Length: 408
Image (cartoon, rainbow, N blue to C red; front, side, top):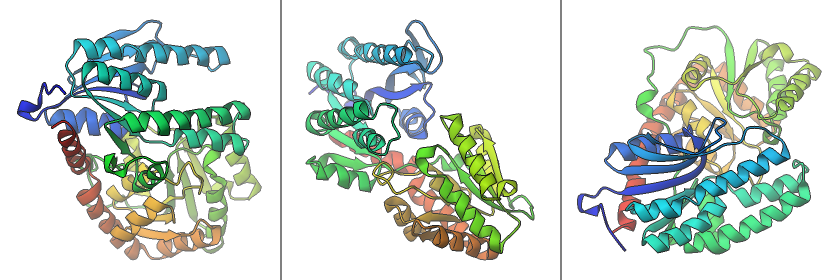
């Protein structure tokens, strides 16, 4: 095994991911693009362009080379198929890149075909192969098919089982190390027969230094309940509308802010229609997509924040970013008893954890709205927890040490 950069404890990575260029997910752009690069490690990137692009190109990003693949715009079946083949074609470039460059690690995130390529490329170039699983892709495909959420259920059902075989029988057993999104995902993967000794859970975090608290929160007499994130149908957001209806029975001036959008605009329209049907439309504010720079200002205005995670096999192993963002902004949070959320709230004291049930959830929301001092104490506890355990400079220590141990 070659060790081109370990003499100075600095590693060189080739990073392949489903994320488009430039990547915006914080566990890519911040953890790798800022924290690890900032420690002197070199990362090259093999990604696809976010914008329509007829030909591939090479550029630089965060101090490394970035090979960017062509992208086909459009949502037709032909466009999606062409996009898929362009993605595979771009991933094939890893063979030439890894042969010409000297890497310590080839890392693939959430791509299965690329994972197969990386197994071969890592053997040919005598490089470590690391797989990063942030989302249960096989389980998501079969779940959508079973629940009637897929346009082509039989196709997705078959894909789910094929993806499961590729992931759990070939890619993960052949990987030198595997990073997963949560302790629950780690347990789930172990149950698939993967050796737990080569699994590391890396939950979501925030750049705590970028979440600067004001001396005092913005003054407002509004009682604002805030949800941040995707409001697609698969997330069961009607639950929050029914919770809001119960809250209004005791606190008539409470407002529910849904800060985010859905991939399918019809999902938003359905929620708006449901709020009308429930008679609560005037107390529910749909903001639509909000730029990252504005998110904190919405959170800071809130009286409390909520993070209900629909109890499905897809979300059970999740590590919700919104929960950590709320806590970083000193906001008390009401969550349901999802594995990671329950653990975080129990360990931090940063909010209330209740069953995924409308009456229980609404009572918890009412309790914090009626006790702002209690909510403020919880908010401060949450912030301290994030500073200690979920800031990306802390998470980067764990990840970096694992890479250094792997490449000894």
